[in-house]
Image 1 (cartoon, helix red, strand yellow):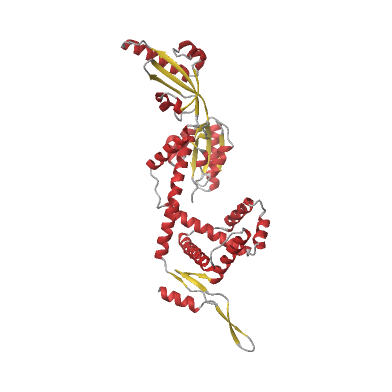
Image 2 (cartoon, one colour):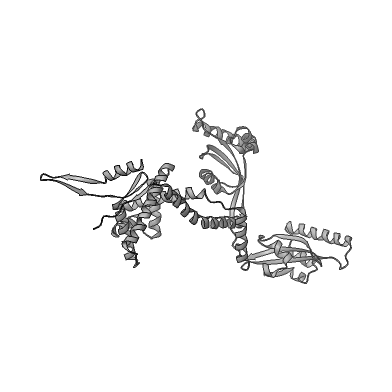
Length: 433
């Protein structure tokens, strides 16, 4: 079958016969440079890419290998593009004109040009803008095919992430300093069990007061047996390596205002507070707590009826005739109905775009009028907002991405080699001139 394909392609190698009034004349418009499964690479494609590379090298004063070596590399790229395009077709991957235009717009912006200026630049460099545009489409499809195929072959274990996080933390530890406050609740050198218990009780009470918002310096001056008591227990700025090991293990990566203790030492029970932090990049993200009622349109229930049903619920809630939670339990569709529509605390960017946009316009305690998302029709109540420290999660995501990218390059090369090994590829020698 493969040789039959080859024969058909070669027989129709784009040779056209031009008939004139005097005689018939054969004119070669193009030829097949390679067969790649059910597709072909044309000699014109090879020549176009070769010419483009040479133009770019000339403008950048870059030297190139011999034409023979360069042609081998160009053929490899075009064969890979053909293979990935065919796989993309089977996978149903398409790049719309709108997506392509957006990509070209972004490329133009990177060059600080308008799209019209970018188009003219491509033409001025000797390329056809239409061909260039389609080559970008091919690149986008190839990239999507490669990512989809290779991603499934890569596994990053939790242990690998933890190991890399440990290295990253060690590298950044010396740059982070903590401003610490210390309170020491002493017990005698020859303390009895009663002495120890009494000291721990006092220390526990101090921790409770601090967690309730009491002034640290005032309590330190009043209660601490530490040498810094009159300074409000201020230990100054210290990095992890400058702290007692017992403190450093408990303080490391804790946020500002954390109270640690009571910690038993040889002198008594220590209580430490993180008064401030410097040198550490802290990333805060906003989370929202919301609940919703979801109605999904169907053949029986039209969009208009679903919207009107929710508006009716909202009117009842505003009039005090119904309870949001009870209405959600009775009418809402989806897994949150059993919880009265409670969505818990979440990053709003994790929601459907329409849902996220609706939440962005709301104030605490407010209800949103019925709106449509990809899941159906909703009404929402925004219960609260808060800022949370997302540094740890972002560091974990960064470690995962670093490990994934390390493996991606090698796995991508391996996958492409396997794909080529399984394909029917025949390259035809260039005509000698």
